[in-house]
Image 1 (cartoon, rainbow, N blue to C red):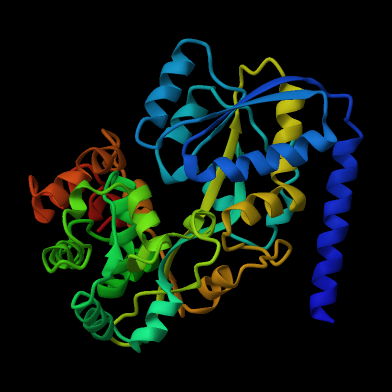
Image 2 (tube, rainbow, N blue to C red):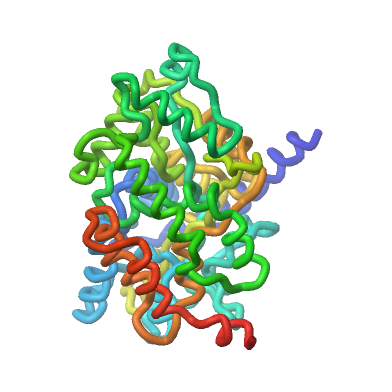
Length: 420
């Protein structure tokens, strides 16, 4: 009965939003939409396809950028008066969002977009300013990190999903003795390092993350943080990422796992669709790196969507797109293409891998990157410096301690946050 009620509510909400949007079917003109990563290209195309079934007179131009250059390109476009109509933001996870709001570059969406899909979830937290105003859509995605594993290789070799951190390391030591790479890892960008680092940090230093979650402050250069970085580098030295991994791109790492050359790949849940596209016949599942005490943390964050430029020449169409994106239908398309975990029961996945992710953890854990953003001081953002210097740790040109000390110098102090 509960499942039937959930499906009924989802259908009713989808019908209501679709009907409301269809009332404005006369909307036309052109929209330019920027997306910050090729990982989301298929998802955006799927949403655009659904939107244009309702609004066939709206011409949409999609521009896919790379995450390492995205905000620089966006800033240049804004300064030149050529800002796209809609564009991806990371919301309050970075300082860019608030800066754009303060500069009047974003259209307020608070009363013009139906966000009811997110009732009862934490999704709106990432886009809601202190005064309650909203300038970007969130998504229904609980974006998280997971260990994706080749089920056939595990079965053939008698490998089992580990219950403790030491068991996970013992598994890595077993796999490295075979012809398979234990973990496919391509540190081509700071983000790919983050998506491997955070599950390691959560398994080694869950207490540090929970200290932040409970008090609102934790030293970003804590010894437990450094220990997690040391562990990431140690695994590389032991060959757990394969030979010459430093020169591997993330696309290469994902392909290596997809084609059965690596037993595992650790990355974002949004990678599921790419793995399936690379090799539809691959049998793979997902789990989390466990703590030594048996807790199983899931580093996950609510993900952001699209902001509307305050200078758009087609506000009606832009708002219609924002509303469609925030609807059950829009988010079903978005998450379906990504193969991502949903924060609401109104958007249901048919992916066994996604359901593995959703059912194999015991505690959620905050992202280290988000913590850096929340603790940013008034000067240069530690998030910006993290992105610039993260790869120096991998290359060996900067020690983990020097790196996190550099970040800590840009964060608020304990006294500034807690007043003591």
